[in-house]
Structure formats: structure tokens, C-alpha cells
Image 1 (cartoon, one colour):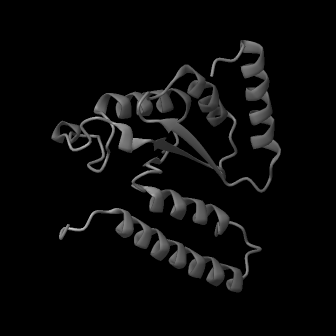
Image 2 (cartoon, helix red, strand yellow):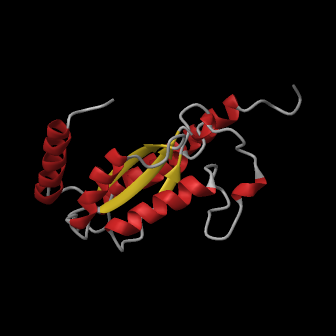
Image 3 (tube, helix red, strand yellow):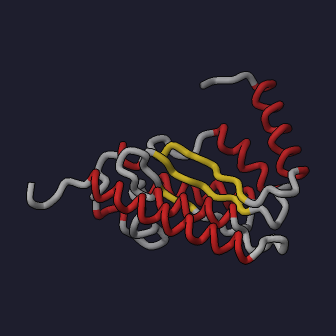
Amino acid sequence: AQRSKTTRSSWTKLMDRYTRERSTLRYIFHLIDSRHGVLDADDECFQLLETLPADVQYVVVLTKVDKLRGNNDNSRIHRGHPLSSPVSPAIYQGLRDRLKAFTTRDIPVLFSSSETKRGVLSVLNTALQAAVDVRQPTISTDTATEAATTAGTLNAAMEAAAAATTPSAST
């Protein structure tokens, strides 16, 4: 949705202050609609990378990959483009170029589809890593074990859900 420059500016200031002052913040997930690629509004979020504390990981998630045409197109496979990427090389390279304009950090890019569940495990595993971040020295062994068990249970549940939504070969 379109917002005024003043409104967007106030949101940017709020996000900047939040990322600098929130001592427990470990990850930021930036969701981008893969059908449209990086928009000007995303650049406002990328500006956070300039002041983001070094111990906060920034992750980009390209969403709605199930909505893209030609998802099985072999032209997507080329040097510098992840083989498993369902987005066009132009969108992927455009994202990488825009990120380079704001940071030298290596920013992970994940792909997801809420309908087909593609990439959901990668996003969940990254979120669980954020929840049980080993950089926090106060985490107990019991908490880490519980989180690992939860992660295993979530992985099994997601795999079962994906299998249930995938048409079987016998039908």
C-alpha cells in the first residue's frame, strides 16, 4: 500500500531505533514478494543494514514462489544463481545488487511458499536458530535440548504436512 514520505520516514526511524536498542534482537526476517522483486520500500528497510549491530543476522525471505510462472524453467540455472531458486535470475541478481549497495555482510536469501510449503523448513530452522542462539551464554543445556527436540518435532510435522499435500504417484 502507498504511504506518505512522512509516514515511511517515521517507520524507518522507529525500526532503526528498535534494532539499535533491542539488546535481545538476534535476527531480522525481511519478507519480499518474489513476484515483484525488490521495491523502493525495501531499500528503506535495507538502510537498517548500515547501523545494524554486528550480532544481529539479517535474512531475506522471498515469498510466494508458488505464484511464479515457469517455476521449472531450466533457464534459472546459471552461475551465481542458486540451483534451487525458483525466482528469475534478474530478480535474484537485482536483490543481491541492492543488498551490496547497503552492506558487505553475507545476507542469506531463503525462498518460501505458504501454499506448497516449499522452503518452510528452511525458514523454520532459521527461526529456531534465532530462538536458541548459541551466542547467548545464558542458555541452559536443558533449554537447548528442549529446543532441538521441538525442532525435530516441527521438522517431522512439516514433512508430514508436505507429504499429505503432495499428490501420490498412484493417483
